[in-house]
Length: 332
Image (cartoon, rainbow, N blue to C red; front, side):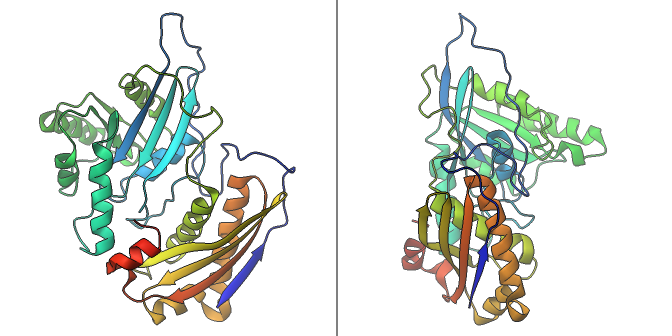
C-alpha cells in the first residue's frame, strides 16, 4: 500500500534550510546577543543530553537548535539514533548529542543497542546534561545516573518545571539532587516553553574547551536530510497512532532526489505484524495519507523547499530483535 502527498508551497530556489519553527516544533531559544569580550576565549565542545524515556530530551534539543532535528511525541522511546544538533552564538558553539532514553524494560536487540549508545556517548563528550522531571527523581533515573562517568562534568536540568504547581516539590528535588552527585550546576527549566534554557546554556558553556568553531554558524545538524526525512515520518506515526502501536515501527528512505527546489522522497514504513500494517494504512488509506501529508509539511518547513513524498507500508516480522535487521535498517 502506498500514498503520495505533494506540496503546493515552495521557497526560492537555492534557499538554505534555516532555523525556523516547523509544525509541532519548539521555537528557537534566542541566544545572548552580547559579543565576545576581549578577555574571553571562544568555546566549542560536545554535550550529551541524557535521561530516561519521555523526560524531554528531544524537546530540549529542538528548543536550543531552533529546528526540528529530533523527533518528539508523548510516546516514550521515540529517539533511537544519536542526533547531533548545533547551536552557535557570538561566544561559543554547542555540539549537542541527543540520546535514546535509557531502557529498563522491553529487552530487545533494539533496546540493547540503544542503551549501548547512551553509555558510549556519555563517555565521549566534554559535558553532560542530565534531564529529570522537576517534580522529583524516578527509579528510572537511577540507571542513567549510574551510567555517567565520574570524571565527566554533569549539569542537572530539572525539566517541566512549568507543570509543577507546588513549587516546594522543585525545592525538594533540588535538595535531593545535591545528595546524589556533585553536579556542576542544577537548573530548573521548561524545555517546552523555553524557561531558563539560556541559563542552562550559560552553565554548559563554562565546561566547553577554548577552541574555534568546528561547524558553520548557520548549520543546525550534522544529520543528512535523508535521515531527517525518515525521522519526521516516524514522528507522525507516533503522534497519530502512539496509543495503538507498539515500538516496532521503522522508517527507511528508499529514494531521495533533489531537482532544483523540489525534493522527491520515497519512504517505506516497516511494521512487525500484518495487523499493525492495517492500523497504519487506516480505512481506505486515510491514516497513511494523513501521515504523509503531515510529514511532508514538516519537511517543507525544515528543508525550505517543495517536497513530493511517497510512502509504503511493509511487514518485517521480528525486526526489532534481529541483529541483521537492525543493521539493514540503519541502527548499527
